Image (cartoon, rainbow, N blue to C red; front, side, top):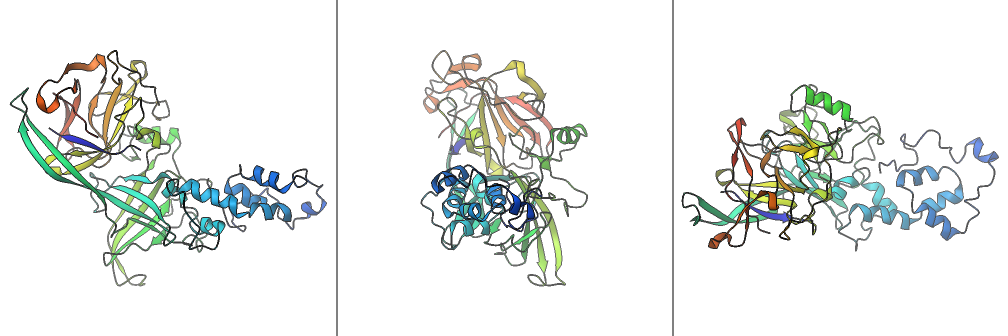
Length: 454
């Protein structure tokens, strides 16, 4: 029997004043229209009130404001405003200082436009870093204040100590318990954003070479994406191919293609205004001939597409205590990361079905509903609980259901366990996902028992 342990519960900008992404209708400081313009009521306000108003503007608007007048330019360059933008993107590092940059604005600009990586922090890919298209990877991106850079590190889980025992209630079943060891692979970053990386690039379609080559000869480049419209997503789904990332069973603010005949070359957004802050891509290859060598040979080139899950879908609450990122032990396949989503049972919202024939909850545009979760008559949490693989294996890959409990409340309750190993636990109806190698002959099977440990 598989075991599961929780491990997490947890502006689109143009910053250069000469950037082509500044809206063209914004007048420049030296524009003739500025000379003849009437005095602004805004500039007549006291300085502290002007700064208070500007604190509500996003960075793009502040940059545009620097082109209107010298007074507003001085206010827009106030360092306290830029400190707020930095802290918003590293919410768990509030004691942060702008070192090694010269100011908060300098720090913000030096890592622009990649702050969304640390803000969303948790990223999962359609392929493993080793290249397998079925297993995927889970990456944690964080800002390193010592070096003023961002690093994306792979999250790994090992089975650790484990034991086996017969299930007293059904001696034909062996219960497998384990104690996973979760760690970050700090010596081999997947993402490395150094200060000023974007400064020498003039197109959002360009790929940025990253300094990640701790393994000799391995090179990688990062590129921005632009999200698909709901109509474009429907068109991809209608073809029957699996070219949408993330799949629709995983909640996401934006989705992109993860297949391309041109290997995504030149397929980035036209401007930062079109760039997605919820997806990105990494091109990885092995190169012989040395870094940057003009005659270097690329071998094994592959592209990984990354996406993130909104915090509200993996943060446990009083009403949704089981929700979060968990580790599951899949025996010979090792440990895998799962997204557990808890939501209300809502039969009226029945929509497209998954590969294990269980109703999903979707809006017409493919976005998942966020439904309240009630309490069962016995005071326990009620609702639907679904486990989706963020990393997978050759049988059931990433982005697929691994099991679903339609109702963990009174409607799905089978019994309260009395046997020693599960004493007091709720035993509920649920379906598990099984498939042959290569994700063939997928089918569902009834699970006798589900037990989850924090």
